[in-house]
Structure formats: structure tokens, C-alpha cells
Image 1 (tube, rainbow, N blue to C red):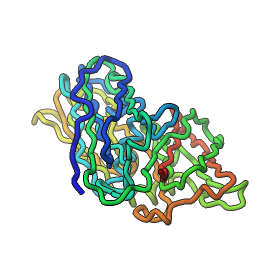
Image 2: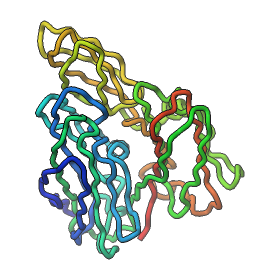
Image 3: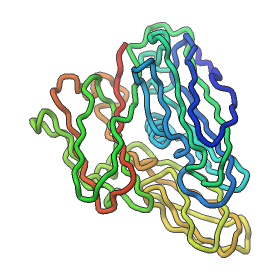
Length: 355
């Protein structure tokens, strides 16, 4: 088998908002699609993480949705799929590019011959990427986009299917209140993702409890405090390390990073005469202050990117051990909002979709 990188969208200049439809014309199997959206920074004030500039990335075949995530959830699931994290750097300085980069993974690893996306199985598969270039930095008005596919050639066996990752629900949480969601039962589930990101707040206050029940509580696979799940599954999936360059202000200012739990931050200035003070990140948000408008850089290490708690089912490399929800009559996820519940929470499933 050979792996070949194919450019399916050459570097394209973006306006402030829009959706780019890309017809997938490849006939070879696709093990992953890499999306890169870069905004041109035009100021020093942050309003969100660069991944927030991608409001939706989806693959459709007519009305059939084969993949659908926000940029933040896409970055998180890409990280959980990898044996090692991609080097991450955010360049938040005037005139520099601030990037959102992630892979849409169709297999358990790159080059997985058993799980891959076969475009010939569909009539008109299309990748749609929706962006809003100034979500991360309010003064930004321009950027670029590139998309590549990693193709598999000379595969000796036909794949049985691919990993289908989709947002099931997005909702506005309420503090100390339960939200109930019926999960899909059409395909076996490999991972359940719960994003409960509140900038400056940890899981202990943003999401209280998580319960997963089968057939009206006939069996309850999960009934746990959300913070406990984060502490169990976050470190198991590995640490995320990120390098950030910023322009300081003489008052505490918010900066946004990828790790959402157990963060460790080390900041240094790029000008010897400038002091810097940093507060540890919670929920992907860190506050930093400098003596003057000098420049600084910092490393942040932690787990659970973009506050997406991953709940894996079975051994991640063994298809036969994944959660066979197709045998159930009902599967309900119950989430109780914490005292700091705010923003939008999202529920994501990663399933085995067979051909």
C-alpha cells in the first residue's frame, strides 16, 4: 500500500465569512483529510481560540451527513485519534497568521486498510467548510484555507467501513439542571464526546454529573461526576502541549489555549526589561499581564483539548470490543449543568459506519 498526499483545495483567500463547498472527486481510498484555516491577525485583543473560526466542517452525500463538527471539536477528536500530538503554535501578534489545523480521520490510524473512506460508495460526496474569520480576533478580516487528502493506493483488501464523527446535539446549559439526549443507535460507538467549555472554569463547576442509561435504566453504564470522568479519561488520552506568542498589555488580558484541564503554564518575556504575570488556564482561558506593551511567549501543557471529555468504549484498536448500541431500544445521555454552566455544550459520537 502507498500513501499519497493530494491537494483538494489550493490556497484560497478568504473573506470574513462564508462556506466553501469542495466536491470529493478522488477515486482512491482516503485515510484522512487535513484542513488548515489561517486568519491574519490585526490586533492584540483575543475573543476566542483560532479553532473557533471554523464554525462547521462537514461531509455530506446529498442529505446524508457523514461527518459534522465544529473546528474546536474537530481539533479535539483529531488529537484523541493520534498516537502523538501534532506540534501546536499560536502566533497572536499583529500581522501574523493564526491557524486552525486538524485532520478528519476515517481510520484508527493513518493507512488503516480496514477502516477508510471510499468515495466510490457515494453518489456526490462533498466537503463543506464554514468559517467566520473574526471569531478568534475581532479585528481580523482576511485569511486563507488549504485542504489536503491522504490517499491510499494499492490496498489489497476492501475496507469494511469508516469512522463517522458527528455532533448529535448542541444546547445552552442551565446551572444545576438536567439535559436529556437520546443517542443514535444506528452504528456501533467507539467514542462519546462531551464538550462543556466555560472560559476560566474547570469541569468541577461547568458540568456536574453524567449518566448514560440503556432501555429506561435497565442498565446504567455510566453514572459519575463529570470532573471524575475528566480526570480519568483526560490523562489516559495524553498531554497536549502548545506554544503561544502574544503582545502584552499592562492589565490582565484573556488569551485562549487548547488544553482545558490540569494545565501548567510557563511564561517568559521577549524583552528583558518587561515583567509578566500569568494565571493558570481553566477551560482553555488564561489571563496574562505585562508591565508594558512588550511581547511574551508561553508554553501551556494539559489535557482534554477544548474541554471535550472523551469517553472511549472498548479497546480503541479492536473493532469487536466497541459499544454495540444497535442491539438497544434506547440509549439516553443525561447531563447536569454545573454552577458555572454557560455558553454552548455539545455532544459528539464517533461511530463505525459500515459499507
